[in-house]
Length: 291
Length: 213
Image (tube, rainbow over all chains, first blue to last red; front, side, top):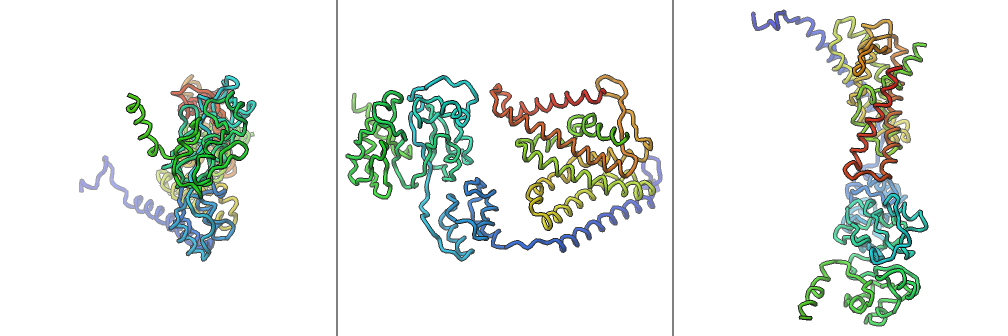
């Protein structure tokens, strides 16, 4: 019977049996308790909430104003929220949700992207040398930021920090949005202290990268890249889609025919391509022609 | 007077995070914002109280008479996990507000080492130390330190409560420091998590002073 000896001591079968019995009894009692309480305290949840949540984008960006996508799904089922509050859910999923809830798909479902209405950056003069904490929101507290232009991007990246998709990066002193990554959640729009970021339709090819309402001479004094409200884009647009309002060109994207005449004619180069892929060919071709 | 000693020990001298280095995972993981740190602290405190209140009679009246002290970890973990589950269900049913405030932290707490540490420390030493005082040799300076442990049901629950409050104190302090540190110019290599570790280290050193009193 040597096999039953463990470190020179006989195995106490009765002790093991008692220990095992105690563990089994304790776990059984607890298991039955959980079962009973679970039955007693069951919360009835609308099964549609789970279905709707499954259809939503699932990024939990919070731009709709509800705590995450599950909160938004709950509000949708209860009829408190509108489907349009979510800019990210694709159209087919929207239709699916409206089928689940028995509501009509409403409003403009054209997807949008965000663009930054400034391209000054390092070309825009600084009013003073800022030495504090580097966030745009903090900088803006000190006399409206360090830029001489009232609506100049400070390029310190508050919007880039807020973006859940890492679609924004700051280069040359101002923020750039990557249109392929942007899901138009709107968090950067809420964050930017200068309110420079705006939504445009995803099909748009050009945007106005300046938001100043100052007149030409004032802009010249502070920024080498700002719009001087010369009106050339307004005149050159064959479709009549651009109008100067308060010295800012406003593009009506429903009329835009993607001819790029506004962009080519702009003396300050402050109308820009949304997609980088659209621009390189003419830029690279230029030096070859000069030779 | 004993209760007072337990409270001081649990809050400062024997702080679970900063002197015993238990529960470091939520201490560093959930201390990004003060709000979530408070939620986590309250959840830990609640679970600690329940642990002490339920595991104490189980240990003293079931395991000790049968000579089965070595089963404590197994039984404690079973009991704690199921009780947290039950607490979560009850909260969900009867207090949805409280559930949404601390419900998400409860499952995280279940198998946390700080909780099991409370069960082990407060209850596991109960049989050997009927006087309540317990001598421990200080790691750094080598002198003897008085530690106070529970020796009755009431003091077990009270020490569970105050160990939990001590945890809350530590995590909320660290969350405050972290929020400040995020807004400061810190050397690039230290930005973010490393500076948090340093802050936690200095807090532990500061709390160490309490054990010398």
